[in-house]
Length: 193
Ligand SMILES: [Fe+2]
Ligand SMILES: [Fe+2]
Image 1 (cartoon, rainbow, N blue to C red):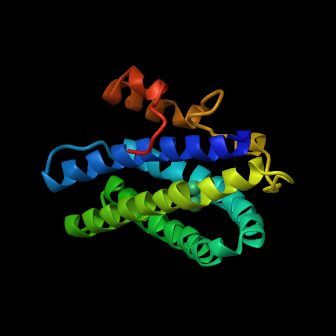
Image 2 (cartoon, rainbow, N blue to C red):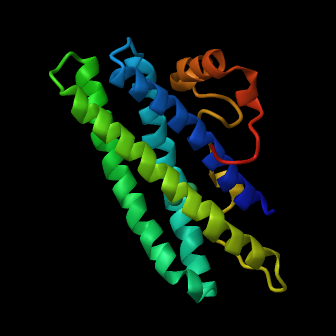
């Protein structure tokens, strides 16, 4: 597997970790249990600042190259491009509701639960399509005779939470992840969910 494809794959594993954490906070909301809004806020900031602003734009470059090299991926790649925009919108809307609750504004519980669940579901199914189809095709083409250049270097994907050196603003989130899920999260199995 090329460094780039394995980095994108690792990003998906990491994002699935964050979605699991977001889901458990949503479950706490459903059960009317105390929940950690600060963690939810941090998790969404990570998704907005890394997934939406770096991971998805880099995929746009890669998948555009893939689409040109493998016409059978055309429709799915167009779908993926649309989903990148949709995920950004859904993520920002959900984050705004989280911030509103954090600041003590009135937000209907059912609204934040519905938005959160929709966001998590949309992103899971999006990553599955990328993993099961596009990354496999990209891998075949990069390893074949001429080798497809996907136009991105793995080193451009600097992850502020799971990469080398955790940015200070994500320290609490990282500690929460380790406390909640243990050291297994340092060495995730190479699969989604
Ligand atoms: Fe994507
Ligand atoms: Fe992705």
